[in-house]
Length: 134
Image 1 (cartoon, rainbow, N blue to C red):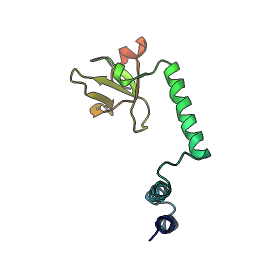
Image 2: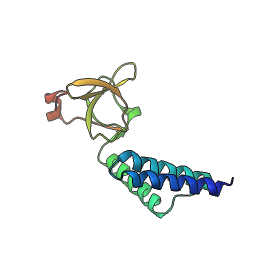
Image 3: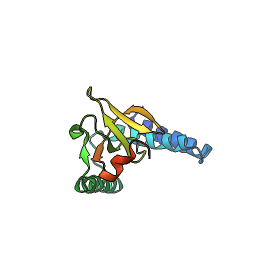
Image 4: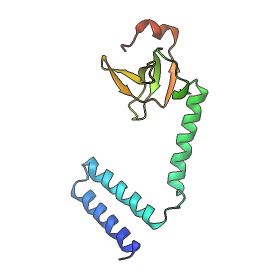
């Protein structure tokens, strides 16, 4: 069986899953996953197409804009200081604190959760008075 047959089978299967339940986000996810795998099998050294390149450029521009607004990478995050943080899950801006051991704790829903941070920004003086609650 050729790689082209595998690609066609993966795409057909993805379309069948998506057609079964278009309201199901897992069907859409499966479709994107299978399409990605099919493209990778087709040419592992493939360059992004125009739509993917646009998304990458947009994300890069947004990252640069955040850096220009004072956001910094996690490696520069101070220890035991409450900061605004952007976690990688896309959940928005949360309050966070890095412990002496390097663990980042996210303040969410009145509790502390271990997590990760892409970018952080020191709190403004007025926000420091509020503490970890929003």
